[in-house]
Length: 318
Image (cartoon, rainbow, N blue to C red; front, side):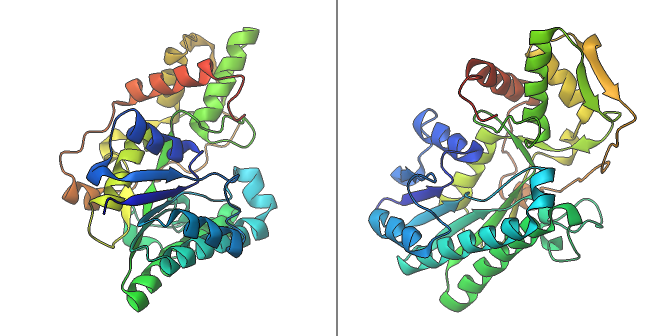
């Protein structure tokens, strides 16, 4: 029987990346059928709604992307909701997956779940070695529990559930909110507005901090592989290599170049905090399994992303 892969959060950044791999790149291992869910199809915070959806589609595999997410302000203001709603979503999805006989469930977490004080480079096994940063602890602890609950299903029911941990994701269908989005899409939106007004593009800090970025379509390809081909149950860090770290300044210059915005109009506000200098992770476990995997070059991926944003500015999330 060909796999039926249910993708929760199917309308979001990574879900759309998976849809692109399946529909445009024809990346459908084992002739799998993919079913993409959005919040319109089921309220994953409600057990009966989740159960009805799983019973309707009868998946053999699950890629679990759905989550309550937000930027720094939302994480700090709504700590209770960020923790409880994400825990409920994760519990309902894994429970219903188990009930319909799903043996493989891949849940997505985030590098923000790792301890605030940690040795670099970060490995998958350091997830529970200390408290996460207080600014997003509700979300982080909920995502940590997804990793724990996956292991509990494996131990008690001999399932094959695991978590994958991407670094900073960017690509088409992102959330381009300046106030509540992540750094790359937020800079794209700022750059778009600066082009319209002719003003400088303000960037907080010196631009020196380093981050690892992964293109959503690369991440999607690796998640499909983790679901349908990878046979292990250990968590996987999904990230380009440590040598591919990008400074915030280089990120801003690349976005400006891709959007035909003059570099000399980037204004770094050094009175603002830089935040954490680096959050380097190692993808050694992934490289041990996929030594020849080739990530899309950063400039090429950013050109695709900025072109999509500008073409879909009126309708994209912002």
